[in-house]
Length: 100
Image 1 (cartoon, rainbow, N blue to C red):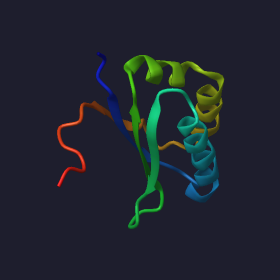
Image 2: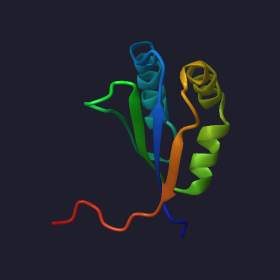
Image 3: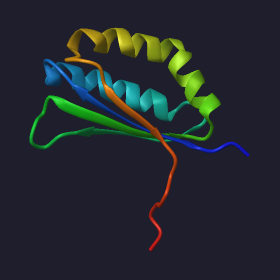
């Protein structure tokens, strides 16, 4: 059985209010894709130019399909002009979840 992929990405953006709708659209589209178990979009309370995504894919193959499709390519092209540096990305495995 394949392991699920947990991924976080942090973004520092120019014109964050213009970018938020682009992110929201991408998050909604991502959640609808096969293999997406969750996809959260988070905006920093102290710095509204900082966004993060937290997502989980059933398999790495599902994630690879996600980043290779037209929707993701279009998202990247819309986002790129607003990025201040490269996103900070971490791929991980779940160590502990919501258990009591």
